[in-house]
Image (cartoon, rainbow over all chains, first blue to last red; front, top):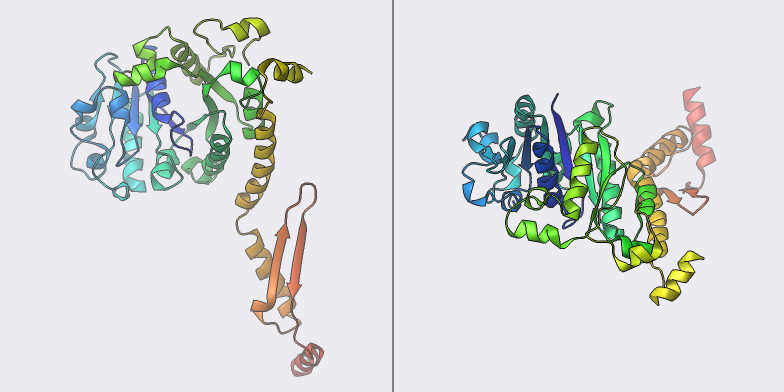
Length: 271
Length: 97
């Protein structure tokens, strides 16, 4: 049965789009059929991070308004055949998205894919509430930094009240994905630790993505980090997270590029 | 202990514990407020309804305040009652009887 997952955060710039692309590609690389859907109307970027920006013809709003059929708007990834992108509109207003229209598209996507990953815009306005509206599960992307954690807490409250699941008295399954984590700084007490974040947010951990130059390198060339260099530290962390989404139990480690001086000195094991 | 050692080693103080404590205090406050956005409105209306059964009140003269402290919170209800309300109560009873 298809799972609809929203990748959300409240705060901007924490890695929602990067994580949507990386998790979507990782799930597809494991043989599952995946649609990644950009909900950031007016500021779409998932197409760019996926390297499909020149192939966009129709978008989410065209489908909502009946101008295009869903299969006309879906773009198939050139590297992984069971990975598809539904882009957002760059020119239209987000008010063109209706509850009902989005509901229909999500219902349609459920019949075609194993996973539907909704890339939420930042903020708590209409775009963000629509992205989470029909979700079964949520990945809350959080940086180890006070404003990001605060906004994540706010988003968790919205997932518990403004989703279809919440209104039916059910629960959206929530996971926190910690991105841009620097184990060395955390060990020195310069950065919130994993335990701090988990205790404050009180939701289970999906994965820890280390701060890495590989993330920018991948987006520069329009490739999800899991496709661009599958052996890089962030890619391995995303692969682990994708397997956890599939229900596998995997030990939580922070992949590192090379064992740094501080790590060796401290003999620290990650999280 | 280990933090202190690291502090010596790094030459800078650990700021993460400060971040953690600030977040915990802030979120405890925000969750309370956001969890029950209408609590004060509801309290005010219900208190006003109960008191109004016995005393005529100006609804604008009823204030309900909630102060959240770290361990204990206080609920402050301030109702301004017009002078001579007893007469109004008796008058009301006579009219009813």
